[in-house]
Length: 183
Ligand code: ADP
Figure 1 (cartoon, helix red, strand yellow):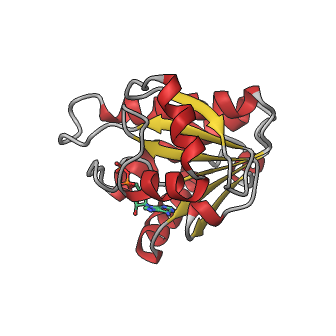
Figure 2 (spheres, rainbow, N blue to C red):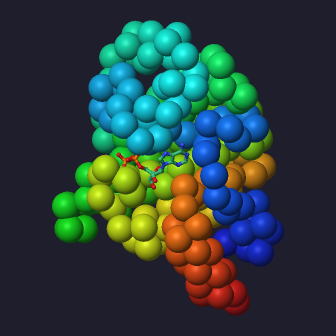
């Protein structure tokens, strides 16, 4: 992975809050393989979007870990929901990093396909799936930066962290990555 330029890091924003209230083109859902809704951010997205989201997801018929599927957003204040299935953390030696990376890459590919200029991600896999927050930031941020360095769309990616503690960790990791990528 090449070192992302300064301008790429400027296209990544970190913020804290509820992703279902975010206004932009697309949000990413940390779904499970059934795509039928669940707990955590998945449940919140399905509740806020309304039952037609679950109907559309049912018709898709599921999603593999590391892959992503795109649907409409219904009652949500965005145009698309991109459902990706993160890896369950099993200690880090079971390909978790590659799968988490693939989730972010596939989600951005699906966003770019429809011209989504602004996309928000939750901290995929860091809730029920047990991925350590620090490791998740170290997986997600370079993958997104690498994608943005090679694609003009999306223009901006927001990571919507759900606690100030998580936001602090992601900020620290982002600063470290910026330093490491300086020539
Ligand atoms: P996973 O099964 O991928 O771990 P979870 O939904 O359990 O998915 O958790 C993923 C992350 O999403 C966690 O950090 C959790 O705190 C966060 N989260 C839960 N609800 C929301 C929400 N409404 N907006 C943004 N992030 C959320």
